[in-house]
Image 1 (cartoon, helix red, strand yellow):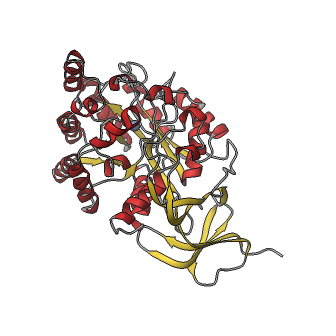
Image 2 (cartoon, rainbow, N blue to C red):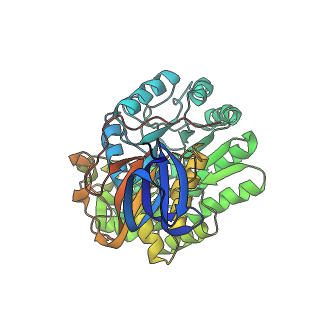
Image 3 (cartoon, helix red, strand yellow):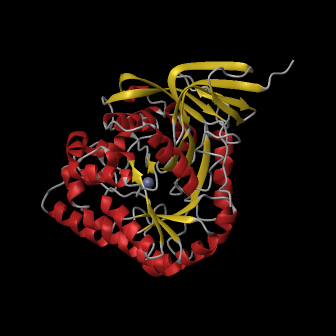
Length: 452
Ligand SMILES: [Zn+2]
């Protein structure tokens, strides 16, 4: 005799609009078939999470699996995502040795996702430093969720600066695809001059990372990309604003008819300049941490609904790349996939805010911007049964618990008190994390195309 549902997951269900105690999500195959409160319907398997919170699996709209290790990094980073309750990763295109700049490379990367990923993945595409604009329509047709370009050059091949005429031409092409284009927003000339001056003065200590990338370096870049957004009609998205002003500028241009948005990374909602002094290279990311007052302004922007979504910008450099006395020589980027859900829950709880905001900003909104909603990022009938289960309590985040490859097991949040831990993760109806062990196999994750 068959039962109507394959699996029922019970708990306190949290959506972007409400918290439902004593509720259930009923799954048939890979999708959500029913949602309700009270006595759950019969199913082949019922998993009772008691009073634990059941949220939509997180959709991390901005992360990097392959900046240091190339595509083999997909397997280990997505293992960490499974343990962190992130069921969809939107992966950046700045990979070694080949950034995702044409359809052939995209096809290769999709193959790596299908063979090695533990969670589902959407992919960004980008263009070469010169001559790459023509590849834009094919990348869009290939199913990428967004484009990414940069005003700042880390590497002429992997992560180039796109000059203004090329960026303008790219925006015109991208506008025709309807896809958003996320921009790394830092002014190269200002940062390079300030860094050269600091070096000349013998100042390579951690705080100089912040001093050489002042707020103006960000907002100058924001203005030029937004002016080009207004001119071309492209949806231009700040890939990470560490400043509330970035969202105010996006708002201002939107009011004038441009399609402009901005994203916050979770570190800009909690870390300050004091943290890079304490953490040294392990607290280095771009843009840098700002002041405690700026963190408060960021929360003001979030609560005023000016922020598109909250991401991690997970960028797992090996430990050796984060050590040393010269802050300028350290790799820029933090690990964040496995701490994302506990940290976001804790930040909200510490401010007396509802976990519905986590479902909104870390799942629904990111899925929407990437054209994945409501298949991803929602607890709705018909959506993929992607769930993260949070056990509330008093925990301390330990970098030894990270499940990424050993050289990536470091965290800026090591030792932080957390108000929750990830007790379980479900990907399309199957449990892939039980609170202690990753249950998925490489290749259980799939490439998810942007839907039109
Ligand atoms: Zn990034």
